[in-house]
Image (tube, rainbow, N blue to C red; front, side, top):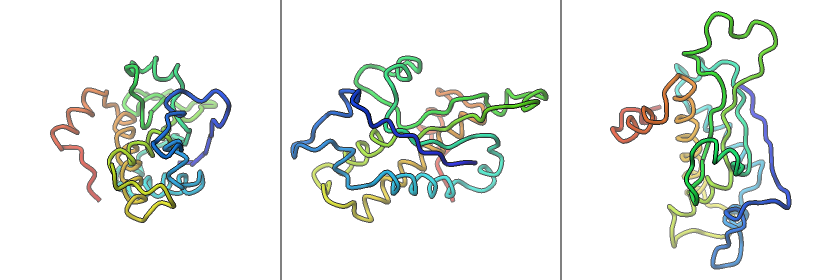
Length: 178
């Protein structure tokens, strides 16, 4: 598993990325969390996935991007005003077959989206959100959101569709257990 960071800091940020908090700062920037700190939390969250599952994840790159593109949201049927925290893109392990990997094979990807993750942590914190440097409690919540996102995307890697993953989340049968 590799950890690659890919940032989309350009002038074409979406309206969601430009959303301002009452203090006038974008939520993703106001968290005080640097790109490197976020990348470190992603790597740490992946390491918290139980080894019996993590060791079975093959030829998958773990990426970080600021937010999903409008095209990605459209392709994945995400309604207007909603977003993604993460995305698995590739051929699930259950569908790879014997010919998979013969010759050059690009890795599948699990992408964690930084801005929506930070916004989710901010939303959960509500009025208690600290616009200064992130507290350990806030870093812990961000870490948990990232871990749950990666866990969700790994379920897709193992062949579960969105309905199956969502049903297990509602039932509590796919909760992360260390």
